[in-house]
Length: 270
Image (cartoon, rainbow, N blue to C red; front, side, top):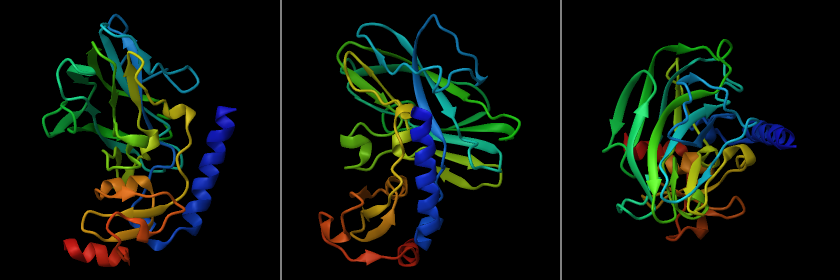
């Protein structure tokens, strides 16, 4: 049943792209990629690189208090609808920054390649870019990839997310956008619903395997008080904007603004 819903979601996304305005072409989005989190005991071992952990095998996104865990970061289904190989993966992390409140992170171990830190990784709001020494062929390696793992513990309920811990995982406020960089340097953004989260002590986690990415665009209220119509949540987040429901209009931004075109937005930053 889940696979049927996922297939329906892919079909809706494809139809969306066929009818989307030209602005959407400036913000390419991965149609299949999921960056999931899998919770495991610190006695468990999941090898780096190709992994047997899949949506079908089951992901654990909930755990107990006062118990140390490894949180594995696994890339699933990145190769769907892709002809180019994978060269880099960039993602961030968000959790309660107060020590002893919610999830505490004691470290992160990357699996392979060269790592570039953006901010004070792995503190909340920071990001990491993992660059592989070679191009990963989507046809030769159509399997999940383990990118690394966090070591965590929580003494009070809390969550750790690859995106945002805000309401609706960033629908109401900007969050971190994970991205794939292909071998031809094309950047593909991941839909926020496809970014995983774990919850400890009864806090909410997010299993992207059970959800379908939003196939619709909507108004994006940008920080410079302009509005871009027909943008996905990922594209809006990437520009620091707040994405409204697809039934909304630009007039419903907190500070009402006129719709803008991608060309006019781009000219502001050149």
